[in-house]
Length: 247
Length: 57
Image 1 (tube, rainbow over the protein chains, first blue to last red):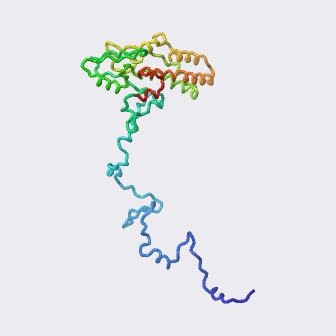
Image 2 (cartoon, chains in turn red, yellow):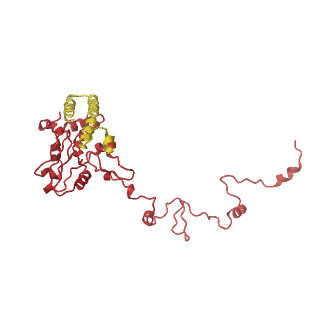
Image 3 (cartoon, each protein chain N blue to C red):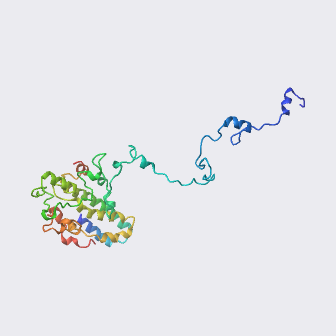
């Protein structure tokens, strides 16, 4: 057992610890591995490298805040950056925002056409159109018998239709879906009741309005015109008698 | 729509339980929403109440 073998000679050499994961190589090997530029990979996140090394932060300090122009200013012509088509116009933010966020309200006509430019919008944001208050004629239309609005003198039909569509007034019926905002407000209040029981009081303060009453109470410019919009027969079922409190 | 909302408002005023009010409100929503859609169809001159039909025009 204690017999000395031929390999015992190597046991006289000092014990050499191998280089493991977190251990540095021996100084003689560092020079060979690092060659002439030991830190040639450059600065890291927490180590800013300057020649003078005067303004450099410490190891765990943030680098000095240096004024630098955002790349978007110098590279504003990059075709993959934000452009006008990325800006999606949204509806006005007001009391009926929740009700207006119905699926059909944000639907667009084309993939590259914003909802603002859509011809037909049944979103509940339509506003009656008032091209020229002094010469404005009443909107004549009936729900049971759709009829075109009376053309204004000297105004081309195409222009008139385009203007009506731009104002979210249907050119065939002459009616505006803005009236439905009043009912969407009631729906919105009803939707709040299961979660917020106190909102019942808000719903009880809601009052039904007829088509004419709605636009009279709104900020429609033509509401003060001598001839108010014609009330369609279908919507006259909300007479002043129903304007009583909802409760 | 006006009649439904008026009746619902009257019933909500009489109900005292929050659960009852909540269920009534949910029922009223289911009654009124289709009517609003139909009214939108009428305003836009459509003969159908399908909202897809209206939006495709």
